[in-house]
Each structure stands twice: as C-alpha cells, then as structure tokens.
Image (cartoon, rainbow, N blue to C red; front, top):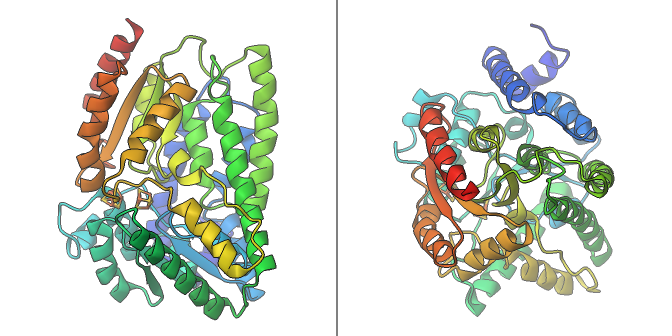
Length: 426
Ligand code: SF4
Ligand code: SF4
C-alpha cells in the first residue's frame, strides 16, 4: 500500500518493498502485544501514536531539521552522551534493533555466533529498511563488548560516516581518564560535524534537557512500586524504547503527563494488573524495538514486570549529571562522573550491577528476578550465573533465560516462566 512517506523513504535509499514488509510485521506485533492489554492508562495513546509514526512523522521531522541545517547522530549504546549532541541542537537517535532481517546477507559478514542485537543492526542496514541509519549524518560505534567492537570494523566499510568511540573496561583512574579523553574527542567531532562551538551555556542546556528526560523516567519507575502496579511492564518498556527515538522535550512532557495519571491511579488503588499479581524484575541485555517476546510471555502468564535492570531501562537512564559547572571542562568532568556509573557487563569487575539489581528488587518489591540474556552475549552470560547465585543466597528467586529474536523458543520460554511464577506464588 502506498504511504505518504514513500518519496521520503525512497530518497533515503530504503528498499520500499522490504520496508513495507517490516512495517507489516511491526504493526501486527504491536497490535497483538500492546493494544490488547487491559486497563491501559489513557496517557499511552501518545506512545501508540509515536510507534505508529516511528518511521514516518518522526523521520520527517528529522529530515526537515536537516534541511534547516541541523544534524542527526545515531548510536548503539547508552555511553554516547546525548548532552553533547543536544548542546549543538543536533538529535541523537538509537539505532539498536530488535528484529532479524536480511539474515542471509548478515551471515556473509558476521560469524553465526554473534548476538541477535548486532546481527539485527547489520540486517537493518543490509536490508535497507532503517530510515534512521540512512538519515544519520554520523553513526557512533563504541568499543564495548568484543562482538560490537569487531563488528564496527566491518560496519565501517558499509557506512560512510562511522565514528568509533573507545571506552574503558575497568573502573580505575586510568579508565576514567580514558572516558574523559574520549568524551572530549567526541565533543570536538560533534562540533566539527555541526559547525557549532560548544560553550558552557550550550552544554548546560543539553544537560538540562537530558536530565529532565531521566527525571521523568525515574518518576515513572518509582510509581511501579505500587501494588497493583499502575502500568504494565510492557508499556513501561515501550516508553523506555521510545526514549531513544522521540524528541526529548516532547517525550519528557508526555511521560510526566502519564505520571500525573498514574499517580491518580495509585491513589485510587487502580492498576494495569490485578492487585497481588506476582512481581518480577527483569535484568540483563537491552531490549530494542520490536523485541517484546519475553516481557509479553511474562505478563501473559499473569505476572507484572516492575522494573528493567537494562540499558533500555534503569541502567541506561538513572543518575543525573551535575550541571552546575561553569566551564566546559568542569561540565565534562560531571558528565564523566555520571556515565562512569553505568554498570554494563563489559566492565570487569562489575559489582555495582549486582548491587543495583538488589536495590531495584527491594525498591519495586519484586518477588523474583528474571535474568534475560541474548544468545552469544558473553558479557551478560558470564554475569548471569554469579547474579543468580547471589540473589538466591539472599532468598530472592531468580531464573536465567537465554533467547534470541526468533519465535521458535516461545513455547519453551512460556513453560519455564510459568513454572517460575508458580514458585513465586507459593
Ligand atoms: S549493555 Fe553495555 S554495550 Fe549495550 S547499550 Fe548498555 S552500556 Fe552499551
Ligand atoms: S547484547 Fe551482549 S554481545 Fe550483543 S551487543 Fe550487547 S553486550 Fe554485545
């Protein structure tokens, strides 16, 4: 079916037939997973709209901004500081992808035992179905896990504008110094790309916008501690996913409006799920759009997800930047302070992550933790066992699951999740 955006997509270089196929799958999946949920807050209408227009109106906004001289930067990781990008008036968009595409083409470039997230990013590029990758003026790769950092060597040959950011693996003084040097180098690269010189006032403004977004997400998360939970885990995940695409100021306003509604729900004892539904914390790899399989299985089984210890969730969005610095250097220090607390499994050792899982489980009154890992993701697989053992030692039930983006294991996952929930209810 012809779309009013066909000309724009064609100009961006998309394969219209393949793209239409993706939109069909995305639309069908969204309808099934989200629109059938009972007791959804009215404030989710905004997010339904954003999702229905994620490749349409949102991309049009970005293309129009580019025509007016603004830049678009794509990223695959929450370590890329959005504050620096916003300081120039440019937009940062997430490029992480949660569906398999162009698998045969991907297999020609990546080993079979590569995680689904990396394969998906390649598939979206090779299949010419992602308007964000095609629209981006700069694509930032980061040296995090081995899979990603080696994959960027190949991706560098597929896109003309890849910028690679090095990242520390150890939280030492040297690691911190590396992060600061890399943030300073990135700041310069963004200045060169945009032609905008970043002064302290501009950087503070970027920080204010991003801090506001994080405050709104923290407000949403805190409301999920209520029983009954005022919003489903699926909807909360969706909001966290939309955070990577939407205009940050409009997004913040919409999340705060939703939170006003959720506060009233909590006061009235109203929930998206039944009071007393088993409460589960999800922990592990990030879940990018449209990777909704596991949360859907968990909530279909009658539980409610009360938090995501994930980069598409609290690991990625918590902690504000102190924006009181008066010089660019002071502000950069504050930026490094904030980002150095991100406890991704690529760090070694990484005790902060376990502490955060425990803290979230207590804060959101989770009765159990489901550790979610993408197949072939070594960093999170390696951490899964110690996390599970530590939680169990404290009497908190934990279930380790490994999956990918296919639907083949859905039945098996469902059986394991249901058995776990039964145990929580005893
Ligand atoms: S899990 Fe690690 S590599 Fe992935 S987005 Fe988060 S910080 Fe980046
Ligand atoms: S899911 Fe794991 S292996 Fe895949 S990109 Fe993220 S950290 Fe790397």
